[in-house]
Length: 250
Image (cartoon, rainbow, N blue to C red; front, side, top):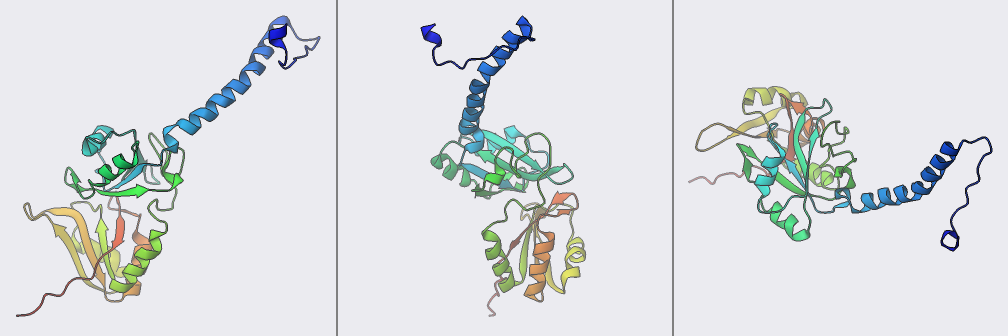
């Protein structure tokens, strides 16, 4: 009896059977333990990890083992692929690592390739990329409409485009032509240049391109409208590009 002092007393309804009474005691006594366990799991789970790498430009066929191989020997805790609003692969993923040092090492792979795809890496700061958030999807479900890379950097990107009038496009299908891009972007304003970047060895598209507008404000409009949209089956990523350097005459 001494060992049970302080325990909550459960009164028995006279109309309750012995089995129902025992079951009610079991359920009530287990609720606090379950609540504490769930809270502890949430605090210590991968979702609270602050060391997350955001990957852009992945092949649609990329698997978790491809991501782990890409970052080797950096140990990867978790990989979460995202989908577009139609539930198709977006070419984007979020990768959790266990320390600041591992994060720096992982970001050092920025610009490397998976297959023929140029991979762009960022440190992810926002909670929207964690499990259950807007940017996460390990099995099913689509992201929200908002672009996951959009944040404080968005203003800087707009300002850069307003200065140069030149856009850098990435994650394009290899079959995209300059005519396709002209048709898609000239509706925002007159273009002065459309150039698809070619691999120097194979002379084939790398999935990157540059589009320059006659008026910078048209480039800003194109960026706002096209960034994050599906173009020929791939999620298009639009960035500001530096003005094309003028070669000195001889």
